[in-house]
Length: 143
Image: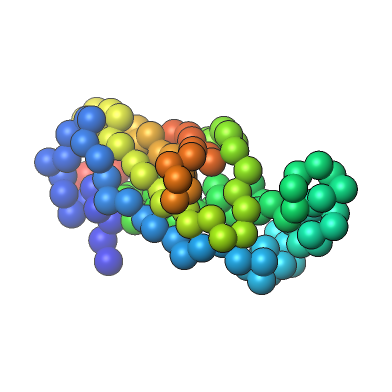
């Protein structure tokens, strides 16, 4: 499937992009992510470790939530078009949280190389709490 901004070249700055909604984060998912990422800090997989650290239990890896944001970006622009992607982590995600990644086209500029777009992205939970927010710059190819 072609990326949203390629399929919809008339999208202008200020317009929202289609959200990506993820199923609830699970403890099994956190164990799998620990193995895939090499981040075996027990606060992500062992309830007692999260309690002892003063976190109120297990918390999700911030990079997992950033990964959700990256997944959404690749539905909006081709992966090969992404030039910069940065985020700021703003709240803890816990098992059971349902994450929705929202985006807004913040800027669009035609250049000799293609269309340079800037996207604001944020991942929020089912209560609307922002977990991650950031920006992406992508260079869409010339047609």
